[in-house]
Length: 550
Image 1 (tube, rainbow, N blue to C red):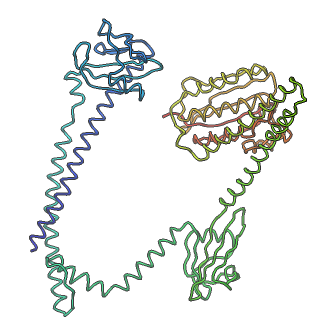
Image 2 (image 1 turned 120 degrees about the vertical axis):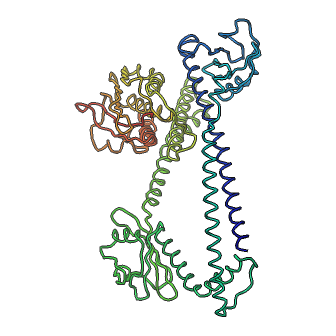
Image 3 (image 1 turned 60 degrees about the horizontal axis):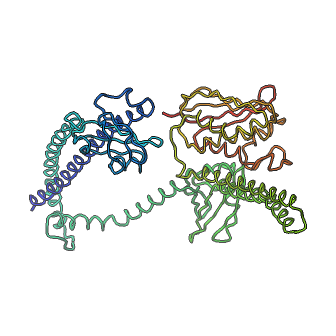
């Protein structure tokens, strides 16, 4: 019987081990094949990029077949086939490139009946297809590494030896346990019948007897351990008190919170005056405590034996969020009231049929301007919501920041020229940033519009990139315009709906969200931002950091 159990054990371990080794071999084969294939495709992708920039005759191997195809599938150029070629829109690599920007296939050419590894990439409105003859060299590059298979066989043999050793070891252990169960039977212990094999016999004679002897002790120990683990891992500060109001047990979070709300020491076995003074006339008591700029919710639960627990919960963040939500709601209502009231007033005037055509056009234009104000406000609020939620739709990519700044200049050039503002961009073309193009654009766009609105006329904007430190690059965005006279406004510039002058209209003051969007976009990219007055008290200078591409 022992030998039979040993065979079952070895067979089970062997089956699991064999299946695992087979799975690893299959997985490694697929991964290695995919890795070699991706490496070759990346090389072909590089050739395609070179061809797109330098032409089909610069920096590529001589055996590389190059085909230039327009978006309609017509062949514009092929360095191997000089005759007119049929439309390539149905070629699998072309179909994939049109759908997913790139694609590849291994097939025989319909033009010269040779087997090629094709790779096609869509760049702008053209598809660049490169191909290598699928010869022995390419097959060798894609060949599976057989060294891993040899290694897996060696591991399997070693594992087999180990399984045999473990099976033999457990077989002897089972025999010793069976002998021990016979001793328990001699002592007259009545055991219910289980399965008839040796393992069932052991379970009958050992597990049941030891369970009966240690049942209560183990149960209490497990429950106590669960309770202590729960208390220690709890996100709340918890302290248990005996019926005589002395401390029985507390977790680290309770000690931390209690030291904030009280100067009394917290010691096991001692009575705490602060807690003793709490109302214990009911089974449940709750109050809120404000200390050192933080808010705590205190709850007390009474138990049947007159012992009780006190729970401290830090609700500072919740209270702050509630306050910010109320302020945000009030600010939104205030910001919406002005344009909505204006639109309503203009429409009421327009409903009067006694006004002239010239006035009618003027009021329609004013109403339209106010709808643009509403659109800007809603757009800014939507962008802030996306940043706060870290929406998955915000895609990161490596970007040359100088291109983003150039786009901002193109979009604001008319406004800059109107106020005679010189836009100076000294950022190098070599600087690459890991980020979201829309958020990076919003940073420089809002900073530029801030200058246009508030800096005055005949001023300069200077954008520079400073040192790279700790994986971040630091930028300065400075102007020499009107600036801010009182420094206490600097720390509040990035608050939502904050304006330096309360009397500013939305025409001159913007939505009040521009610099808040800038700050949140910078924080979203793992950076920081600060503002200070410019040299000689003129203008403003913003210093912020962004992650460089690795």
